[in-house]
Length: 291
Image (cartoon, rainbow, N blue to C red; front, side, top):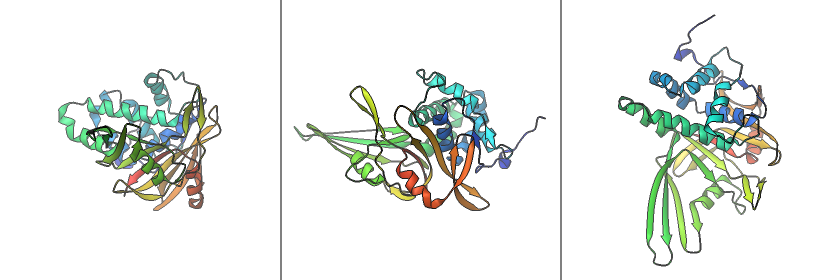
């Protein structure tokens, strides 16, 4: 039976499990993270012009996910799409959630920016929801000259600070880099509604890759570059660099109460708030929402 569901009937806090097509837990956990940016998702599906673009795969997935009758979803459209975005991905190998999120956000924003000029306000609002300005200041020690630059980005990639095992310790290590011939200072401005943060847990050591398993204190609420944020969702990787499993943890508003859930592919289960901080310490991709 064919029926039409209106925008106002969609459930922004729907709890939906995602089918694993074979080592696609990296994609499923990433989609759960992206779906937690619910205002951004609703903004996307509000533009009918996007249905005439390649963004229709995202719009259909969002609408299917938010449909009040949906409990389990097979995101085939996004699975097929990722194989086109990442040519190294064959469809069945274990991949990285951070890479999936970067490829997907870049794809969405590229499509949005291709809209005609009459959609400029929509484009601006969409970009401002998920991108920030990364400011770089380089001071050369030889002559004390300074070079400044800035660019827009959508994922903040942070090194892990072994001396300060907090998120702000990672931010401090990221912000100030002292090299032999120069010092580099990074800062963020034009802070977005949704801030995606990824920790560098997977690192290259010579010809091999290793996983950094240091525990990092991740606050549920915090201030980042002068903007107050609350944690909405995060991705946890369990196992080694050569294998393992990805799951997502997200907060949803159920009957007026904000509750945390674990999204393990098609299985969705409630998670005690008291456990969230400990689980987040082991995780590596986070979604913060501006307060």
